[in-house]
Length: 96
Image 1: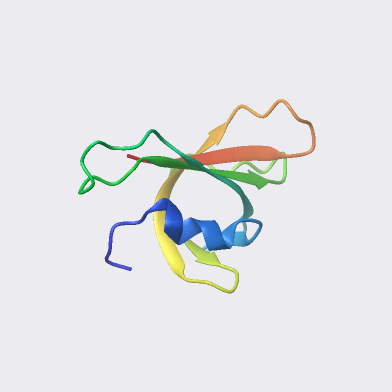
Image 2: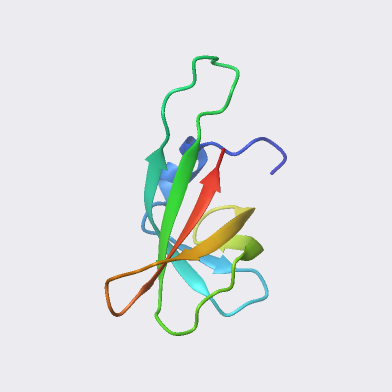
């Protein structure tokens, strides 16, 4: 996909599994959070993706390709984040 990714690209994939290409991790997209509106309509509105995964085997911070269940292959930078709930590990991807 060569076009700039927007929140709208991800909304249809909430609750779907994003599998790391050539890896063992599968993360579920749980939420798409929109940033504040941009005054210039030509500027992409920022957004954050929140994923959940299994605890323990944490995917290190980095740039990954993901195969989306029933969807496209996408590449973006993901970061593990503090997860106070036991039994899962949360991640975020921020798009400015």
